[in-house]
Length: 196
Image (cartoon, rainbow, N blue to C red):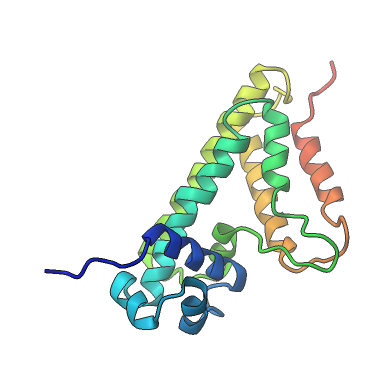
């Protein structure tokens, strides 16, 4: 009979997720994960498998919790245009001389072990969730007159999605105060209502 786990899986996955999010997959060691979770390497291996397996579980946890919560908070109801802009802006500003952690999904597209089909599947699923939520929000905003309705809703949503990803990559390196204001202005321009 397998031993019962003596830890809260959600708490451990949240701690591991934050560790991978802050340091990246390659730079995160098992010692880092021990320190973050409070578990020994043996307990982590027994509970989740090797580092790759723990990363996969933490990445899925990120999609299920952080991504789903951001979609619910910004893209499901309320002013669609303002929600989309808040969705894109979140995570960019960490103050002068403090780097952003960006987005674990975006970071993982850049550096995670993409040769692993299961990692690719989680990343693709997470990005599709975001893209489909953006499409729905753009369509809702167009119907309400908050977003220009002269564009193809899917194409417009994907432009916003790609811009958001690029901004999140840059946020991990740029500490110039308010560096994101000009590119955010370009995103706002994509969503502007066209005057007749």
